[in-house]
Amino acid sequence: MKKQGFLYGSAVLIVSALIVKVMGALFRIPLANMLGGFGMGCFSAAYGIFMPVYAISVTGLPAAVARSVSAAAARDRLSDTLAVRKTALRLFGAVGLLASLLIMLGAYPLCRFASGDVSAVPAVIAIAPTVLAGCLVSVYRGYAEGMRNMYPTAVSQVIEGAGKVIFGLGLCGLTLWTAENRPELFTAVTGCASLEREAVIPYGAAAAVLGITLSSFAGLIYILIRDRGESRSDDGEKFTGEDKKRIARELLATAVPAAVGALVINLTSLIDLVTVMRSLKRLTETSPHIFSGLLGSGIAYDEMPNFIYGSFTGLAVTVFNLVPSVTNMFGKSMLPAAAAAKAEGDMSRLGECARGAVLAAALVSVPSGLGIFAVGEPILRTLFGGRELEIAVCAESMKILGLAVPFVCISSAAFSVLQAADRADIPVKIMAVGAAVKLMGNVILTAQPRLNVTGAAISTLMCYILICIMSAVMLARHCGFDLKGFSGTFLRILISGAVCAVTAFFTFNWLSVNGNNAVITLVSCCAGGIFFILATYFSGIFTKSTLKMLIS
View (cartoon, one colour):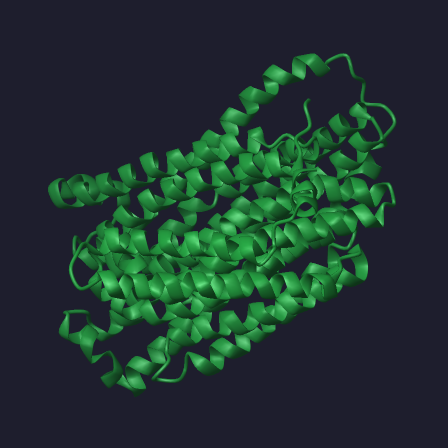
């Protein structure tokens, strides 16, 4: 299997991530138009309950398998890499099956506990089998990534993204159409006696989620077929040199801390679900005047918390997550090289890996995050032009989340290197502290009538600033990362990002007198990007040594 360099491997994953995110936008935007704020609240509630469990399979397992495989490959032990994969499939396949069953059986109490609203129960049940598919496909992805081959991950992600659009939108549209045009069939299939929109919408959200489940199995089918074709060349290798029980212990030793870390990372969405919904329900009772605009639009008080939460997560958080989903690929592609450097005891090379991952994340996330802060509302109008009420609800939150983007991306890159350096426990501890800050911030800030849902965005910013600082310090302490030397580089990137944001802001305001919002927003973002590139060039951020470090 041909190994890929950091920049090449990152390019493969970034291209696939961009394609997947485009498909995600093609999925989310029509879905928001189909379901509205209330339906997106059901959809997001199901995700908020489900994602902490699913994140274990997506984040923890590939990292564990990739690390074990890359360490064995560095010693030229092909049989050991295959033994790792076989053991991981058996172990984590059982874990995925058990987790799927637990989610399905516990859907009602989970929804009742998380938000006090059981309208998301059908969606939670529909998405539960995705855990099993995620566990299995993550083992194969981790094996390929450990061998420094990013193609299986990239292609399977694209297949999942395409399946999400086709199955998710198709099933959602079919469900809503059936409820309107074939009510007797809808009632027979769902058991729902009422045909009121508030009763039908949760089943539309569940149908969209079922499409996501089908797309995850489509990705698994592809990777199984691909592996079957490649396995023939490995049939001559015997699984010798590794005891299976010892391999399982080694996998768990890495996977459990990484999985707990992934769980803690994804607790932020669950924290938002639990705290924001409850705070909004209290505010509709104690300070109903702050929601008078929504009442005038025809939304009842009892529907407002779900509508506001759905607007925040369905629009603002969707845009916020676009950049980290791309920069996460830098850390993932760097993991095998960092693990190999650690296995060889080469701290200098490990430090270079850390600098490369953090630098790449900063170069993408700083201009993107500051750009979102500068022109966040125009971006929302470009992507969700038909949802003016939802945009009005979450526009201010969008700007705050933009400021948090660089801290999220840099922290993620640092965590990948720490996991590769046998310190998977550190991200867990850091994220636990961050989650505590997020929880306290949400409880205090979302209860303020003038802030309400914007308080969740502010607490997210506070949480990730602290996480980023702590992760950078730990990276310097354990991975040879030159924190003092990188500070000057980061300052120049920050200044260049500010130039980008200011350029985008003034370009938009200059052109917005007359013209199409989408075109003007695109031109403004491009202008900001050009000025960022010029600023980084003249500030000397890119040097021959920097490019050599990223390519190697």
